[in-house]
Image (cartoon, rainbow over all chains, first blue to last red; front, top):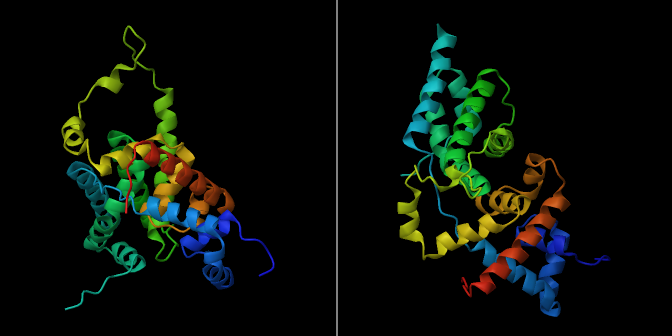
Length: 77
Length: 193
């Protein structure tokens, strides 16, 4: 590795979206770079916050299914 | 017994062949992820319902018109439609005249026709409600990337395509979202595992 690791590299590393070369380099050098660990810990902390799953109302779903059916009927008539 | 999951692309093909149940499966599979993403981005239950409905109507029409060519990338495609729909509906909403009370407040902001308060009362003190309020306080662009990456599980490349930006912009927004959320967490002295 000849270039410096940026915050963007670390974020991509956290989400497993970086190249294997950069990923291996970061993993091997984490101990020597406490600032990387701070950012990765923050990402981990935020990722662990769970979103509440929400659902559309039954009426909305019904309208959608009806729409999909209407088109079906028209196209086959 | 293992259950085989039929790929989205196959479901769409079956729906085009006249199989209504295939569409129902597709809706059932993605409704939670799409609706929750939209709700967390727009912060308005009614608006989220409208966007969700309009999104799926558009999806139906596009599929029927043979415009779906994203193989098994249904979710990013649907979220892109939902995002564009949200922008359009928010623009329309801004054009509507606002009815204000004597102190200049939008009276519809205070009307609780939808029984949200009941739900909110139950979760008022818990962490989930707190997360929602933190996310609500993030700037829109940061909130969008955070929801699409951490909840909808899209890659930064997919988010960049949906939001018509580039990957670096998305990563930058995520970084600021994390910084802001950490600040809010520290302020309310809540720590998560």
